[in-house]
Image (cartoon, rainbow, N blue to C red; front, top):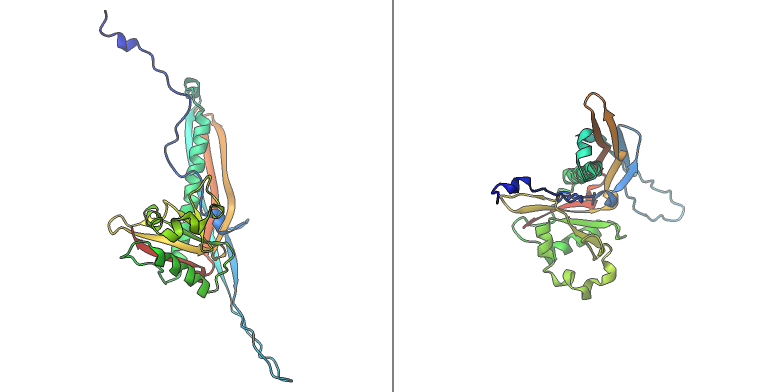
Length: 275
């Protein structure tokens, strides 16, 4: 019996490709004030609040001067380019092109959330509603809800809060939030596909993109109202395949163009917690 017969053994590869674990879609863009534009920047007009007043009989009105301001988000372009040799495609039993396209879309979706998160952190209200020396608890959540209400942020189902997964784990220890007797199945809008809970007029969800200092263990969670974050899009995610004759290969380039800014900081807050 030959002792080297194992050299002749064949190998078989499964045709189903495993995409390395990653975020496969944007979680934040649907929770912002989004609009498609054809310009290098998008400007959001902000109109100040007015207060009703009385008037004595035959007296003249005291006319109000509403504050008007504007904020601007500049568009930025992002690309994901890859290359695959044409003849290499003949030696594979997997859908290589599909794998490239899927990885591109995932990368750009994650970049979308990174852009939105950076804008939200930069433009958030100066008041931090959390406590960097304490974990997430019932009082933390209620401070968010109370602050929104005190600032007359609309309680219209468009309040959101994104927590670091470690803060989310702490939140699930709060009976009023975790117990179905308080929340109910009808208040789980994404129960079949996304971990999130609608409670106290706010949609709460865990998000890996939330900034966390690995040394101090402090997470910068975010709470906001949809209209407080402006999100302009020049171009949605698109993927193009083209044959590169000089390389005898197929090039795949995915791209998008977008920008974001905070429209009104009374509708967005950082919530620092120890996690």
